[in-house]
Image 1 (cartoon, rainbow, N blue to C red):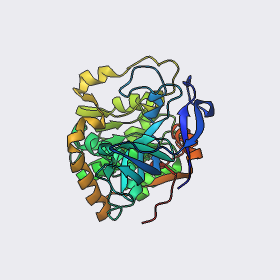
Image 2 (image 1 turned 90 degrees about the horizontal axis):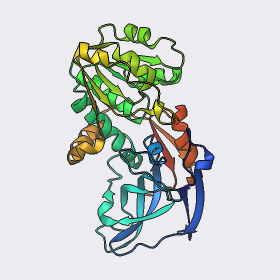
Image 3 (image 1 turned 90 degrees about the vertical axis):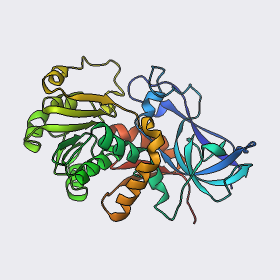
Length: 339
């Protein structure tokens, strides 16, 4: 084990889109675990769009990071030392930990992973927070049923790609918005979506959606917001359900555009619009992980991961989320796992 530990801190609060000046790489000695703590060597680090909100001092559902604070995210790692916990050296665990090569945490906050059940990286993707978000957002909030037309934005991302497949398994017609022809092929050819729309090359979202969903939209899983959501609202059917999960198109906006503009549609259609956080369903996480694991093992759900290498690449991996560089779950591989 090395004696030094690289970690990323918040160097400054970004105005608009973050850039390299937002982050500062620091190097310190590897920390020692205190009583009841374990020392975890990071293997995979998750970067997620919601982290943009934590870089701002504005009120949000997640507490803001302080300038100078070490950034945090979901991690899969290996216990390399422990001091009075129920975990053993060599255990593979997941937790919310530092953007760092090594981090300490109370043993009670570490959740064990069976490395024989699935690749350990899936605990941050299809079998982790993104998969659970897709599961509850599709089945509970959007309440998708057989025969529905289901639309999802950010469809080639970690959440959207799983949400669309769950809707398809339910018997819905699935339409996904994604940002490149490669991603549309991924949706249609690998994931089994009925139709994909490239929002980068489509000038009229409403017309494109009418062609892909001629009978209107019964359920909408919104990860993006903005003009695409405006277009989807125009196509909502009576009693449609809208699950608002994210608004990535707005996260770097320095001033918010006028809106919402399409709420008159909700009167006409009697649609239900509900925002949600995956933590709302925390008591049922086990249910979601079990079902998702079954679907993955049976080949009913396919997943993709985009992986960058090394702790130094973490900021670039995060910034790439806003350019749509990832297909599926964006991960940073920091250490090798030897089973």
